[in-house]
Length: 256
Image 1 (cartoon, rainbow, N blue to C red):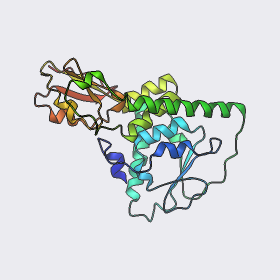
Image 2: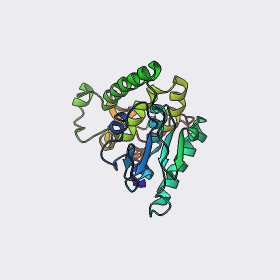
Image 3: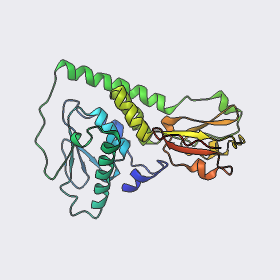
Image 4: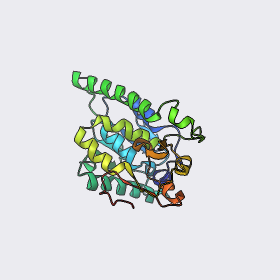
């Protein structure tokens, strides 16, 4: 399942959706995740821990007040053990680039941890209510409007476009952290577009974008950063080399 975390366009995904499963867990318990080879009750079982992308990890970091435990008891003998190691690499990369305590919020354990103390205090209750509301609103924002008048005249069919799970998870996570943390994480995991004067406004990049992140605006493309996965298919497609997609926090190079 490591391919789902590495897929640049988000086209490869694991069903069912990850966010609703986490949202329905008891809010006062420390979250426990393991693969389908390890019995967990309670806990969340996923096909493989290697499926967890950087966006999954950010979502868990923002949504879980207690440290998250990854049960790796079966990983050593698994043929997909390297996938979990790559997930650890993603976790340490996040900590290195954001300078946020990601590693402290996740535990890799080879035995089932004991039950966490249940917390039903007033603060925990209202924090969970806020997170649930933010999650629903973020999901609606990430999905975009049902119709866009500017798109109607382009002749481009957007019916097959969809927001990948990774983008939806990031959209739900950012409102749950502090503004400074959201800015830092966004600089690493979100993207921006540089457009050169050689763009002729053909909007072919808009049509080829798999997530609908590129939209038409006054005959030039505009980028919805919340929907962009940084796959750079648009840059490969552009015959004029007029588009550059780069991490939001990367210094601008400037195109001719």
